[in-house]
Length: 139
Image 1 (spheres, rainbow, N blue to C red):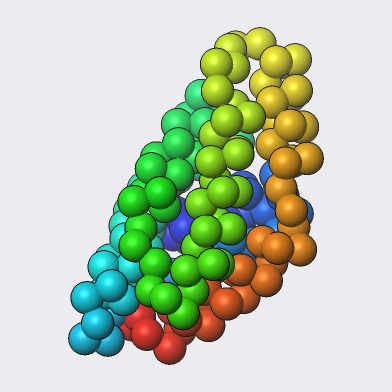
Image 2 (image 1 turned 135 degrees about the vertical axis):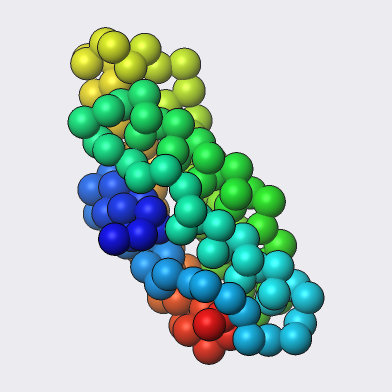
């Protein structure tokens, strides 16, 4: 599976929902914002896979994904949805900030903070809208 799907599964475990489930390879629209969005989304596929049994690696992968997401320019049709995704990723990174990954209790507490910080209803709606946009505009 792609890293996006692995990331999705990991975040789904954290937030009880899937994030950006569609894998992308290119953009079919001539709009530069849409094209840039498609390329940024595609770059999530090339990231290292997340291994939940490796807390340090998982946190690093989430931070890399967050960096990519925060740099995305959202097409106007999904700007509010991308904002939800950006906020979710940032709150997850914040939850793991400064965690000693060799301390199982500290990692577990950060995990619980990350889970509780996610608004799954908003995230599910945003995911549905982003996926529909990607399906229509990114090939």
